[in-house]
Length: 607
Image (cartoon, rainbow, N blue to C red; front, top):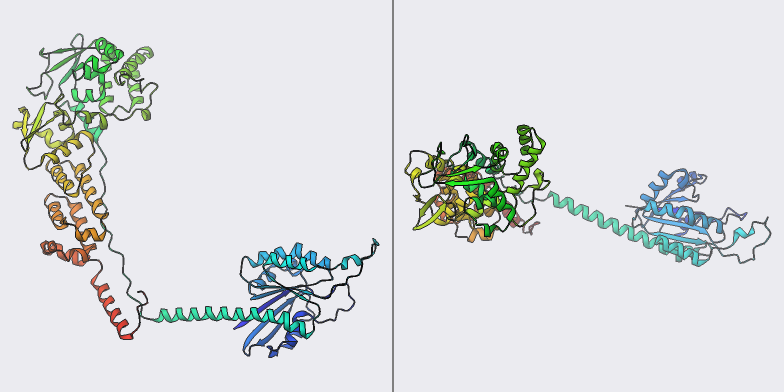
């Protein structure tokens, strides 16, 4: 080991003619009892060096001492790299100055102490400040040409203040004789030498222990569990389903005619009433007293005339016999000419306002007529009792209507044209919504099936609560199962009616709930994951069944202790054993390591 000391500053009086007085560092090296050998040839070769002098010696018998003595502070100006390298490699820093050279001290304080701070860079290197010499208390000359005033003394308080700035130890040495060198400077310097050697010995011991620790047999590393497959969701096609209902005109129960009955535009009461209070008033869902908005009532009376019970010139397609046809005469011919575009706008979610403006403008080619029609559309979509929400409207300002408005007609007899009988209870519904949202029901109500001309339709194999959740999804495009078992029942219902997006939503809900279960709850739960796996396979839920197999394999230590684990098929158990976590290899390595620890009669470095 070695100790590196760097000394800065000139302890000699710069105005004295005697420049042969010994330096502080050399005086210590020559007089200390700890120094067993000094490399005098090396020191002699550097005596004339204007930058620094390097000394090498042996202390405490076999410890190498390296001292760099820099009497000239200009080393910071001439060679910043060398000065920073010296400070960076120093174990102890000594700053020395003469108490009778105030100018040099002031230059040290103003110019070089900040540089030393910067070079130290918050390192915990001990610093010793030594004030050398006996103060000369003569009165300085007042002659402007005399330089004796530059020899005014550096006071003790100034030296102590400098030491505080550097966090250093302050010493005053009146002379460089044996007493002061040994008792004061030598004692402090040797104390910091011992501290430095102790610190280095401690770091060396830690490094040696770390090396020995690395050479020991390490415990086996537990690899990460295999990543389970990611389930990708399906984008919503809610608005597209309702728009397709308008295009194919299935289950249409409304026909709009001009006054001359020359053309017909078919639509659906349930969709129109879910959009506008005006249509609720028109088809008897609400009365004028319920609407409480005279502008809506006046527009309904001036724009439409409902004629029920009369035969259609051409009967709308898909209307069951139990639903009486409704004929609506549009009194405004300009509005009637744009009715198909307005209905496409409504069935598409009523958020493509700019497109509606453009279509009507191209069709009418008259700004006044275009504005006339658009104002009536705004009034139709207006909420009674409130200012028009689509005045000066743009697409991003019109909220999508169906997710909330069709919910008003869910599980209500209003406008209902079909009743499901399930578990002794009845559930009203609307054919138009069912046909638009479910292909199986579209085939059932429009094909050669008994349900096509029936008002009451029985439902088997599904509970009432599950079927209500299924219908809620059809009406609102959202669902929120209360539990994993309810989600599985809803998944089975969705598979029965081939509603794939609802099936994916239920799969994602089950996966999310199982992933959030802590290990303790997973071990104590009565929920059978193997039973869920069998149901998922039986009902063609490939994504969920694959994920559940990986889930069982990832939590092998939990599920292998449960009785349901024995219900896995041979193929499933082989898959779980192949992908189990932790693996058999890890458990074998762990057992070998424990045997090694026991044989060595030592404690585990991990535990």
